[in-house]
Image (cartoon, rainbow, N blue to C red):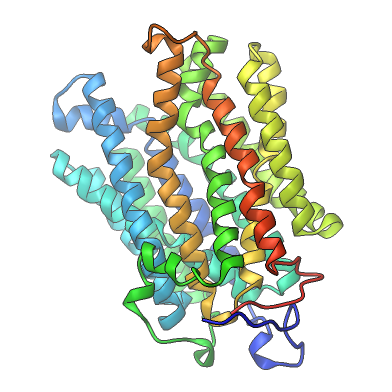
Length: 433
């Protein structure tokens, strides 16, 4: 595979470089799809321990262990499926992959609502992990219909939808779970099927037939998706930088529910409220701040600035012992992930239209790998420095120090990608193939 360069957005007169037309309804559908995906994921958090207890008959401690393996099954299937669905969408188009994936997610929630055994729960989570990989196709769809200079900002709208779903899901799950353990899953299922029906009428195809490519199994798996870019070093380095940033940022979902009660003395309710607030801050940062920052500074400065801010935020959380101050640090934390979407935009602009699904699949596989690798590392470190290992000092903030170190490492592959040709959409000097 040989690297070649072409003007940043391509030749404006070239038909192959024009963004596919899209109605406002289609963009709204994509954003609603992400909200529903994340809402469905969050809606089960408050009631999943009770549901596991109902079908297993074990204690809460047993439910926690089973819940961890359910999360692993979900993340591992997403890791395997992301490049597959990305490549399928490059061959068949975005529309069918999105609609079928959303329908499968509805089936998953139906299975969970009817589950009578642990086998049913695992089957549902495996199916959900496969279906949730439609995030890949959603990002590819947005890349199809966005001009190169707008891609990172529009990816931010998808990130905003993630934040909205993260606010709605746990709150709705808590309210419905008070009525019945199965009710949240029924509602999540109905939301998915309603969105499928909506999409059948309003979602146009974004990938033109002439831009589609042959499906290749060698490229439609996590290893193949990385090997595909092994010789395209700028993309490979960008994916590595993205994965490191996601690994560092995963410290929040991995240990927040354990760290805040231990350090700030927060109750379960306070932990839930803090997560809801963070979801609101995240939605604002991704949907409003990112768009302004990209227009004002460009992708490169957003990556540098937000990654540096992430490092500072990790260090603050490692040492701040006041819950009141923690809320202030959360505001900074909501801005520290903007670099992820900026890097997705840089990657999308570095490949042609027929590879948008594949490159987003490779990125999502990296994120899914982090999702099932990070929790045992970070929670294990938290446990070790919270009295779990007698000879270690008690320092619950240790995972945040590790996250700060990992955040600093992001700059190594990122600057390697810049040296090898990755440029901002407004001033790129080459499309890499």
